Length: 451
Image (cartoon, rainbow, N blue to C red):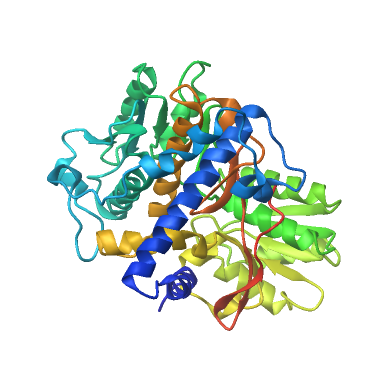
């Protein structure tokens, strides 16, 4: 059975296939140029302090921004200079018919892509076993495509294998940060290594764009991946924006519970709504206790948010269903973590904010044609971070990797949608809002209110 995420991906891919080979090439080139120009101009806007009264989408629209005087040509030129040839040399690895390239074969040596003056380090678990290594190799392929599209003449991207070992990843990251040559570090994907970097002090180190799942971020160490807290907050904001006032949050006991609670409460405060109670639950209690506690503590909530962490929400959803939730008076809000599991009838009627799979359209067709497999979110994250680095290098040069640019309030639009980084290292995303109907995600709004 397909997961709901897979269903969305299939639908998105069905709508982005080119009508013909020539049309596809022209369309892909136009999309790459538009994407490049949007990134470069967004960075230029951040440098000169430009703000849009209508918000980030307008700022990221190339036609809505005037680049700083003397920089317009510099921002646009790399779109024509960047190589768009597929990297196919033995040093880059070769595509396989059903999965990511075997970058692990080259992992003992550094993998270097591009010849640009701005040096960027990338740390990936290329030779790690299981899904960790597979995801690392997908990120490697995403980085290769971004370099071919945008970064080849702007960046020298040095990729090192962390092996999926947190200790080794930490050592590589510290080495990259203190080398004096890397202007930015993309990765690592190991959570413990990213958390260690977030604890380090020092204002002169290059920024780190961490690829670790459920990483909260830290000053100068930015969390790239969509977290459950992001998804829960965006979904909550969308329902609060429709007039709901009283919310209940159910969250599994664990280190992530406070982050989810904080983000949800902040989202509600913007709309004058309240988080009546946060109810931690244990995966072993079957869900009945937490739902019973809610009934005892809160009268007539307007909405219930159910986070699930690394577990399944099914037990809690079954207990809520027995109480008539979701129903005419109580809305059920889920998170993107639900979508990591096969669709279940208990999801029916829930609202979920998650990434827009159609955003990958500009790169999906080229990626599949080049690497012979369907790109997933791992590919998209890596592509976006390399593309962002190229955009900064284009608009600001090697010394443009600073807080002013990376933490600009308008954000950036990439293949994972609209995102921005905050001073505390967390990321915020404006996401589409869906409702589960008949086992599928039905689009309710093209984007949540976001930020």
